[in-house]
Length: 212
Image 1: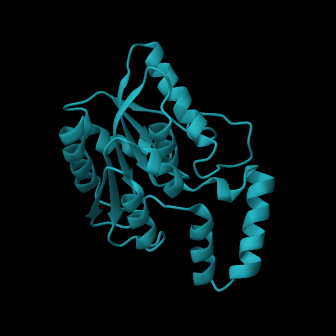
Image 2: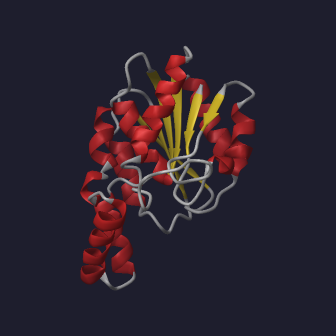
């Protein structure tokens, strides 16, 4: 079964076209992170993958209770960090065989710095971002560092980055690939917020067929 994790400001319905590619050979499980789509959350905002990791663990527990234990993970943007966390520390009785990460970031703190530098408000902007995350998101951005966690992922990992992704610097995607013990790196022709679902789905499907 492929478990899919959506990005920020999206929900599970975003994956409909890609699901049609996967379902020819695999069962697919999709869900909404807390406060997205049909899900509720006690928190004021998303946490860019930090608390969303618990949502993914909940989904995996749900599957394990039904005897579904052989898993591949597919994450998009924010959804990549939960996938990395779960693959590095899988629940009991769950075997995560492979992971595909589409448009991932390596470290939230550095990403915020990069974005703010481009906006020419680096120092005051970073201070404001930290306070907003602590107050509204109830977490510290230093806790969201996929590059540190991915070193503990032992299954094959594909990092799939958009050639026109202006939002996340290329070096962040490559850092994830370099830190993954069994990493692979490919491009797709789109950007961070757009892309050809058929192209992305087929690249991910090929990787799954090789490793899952």
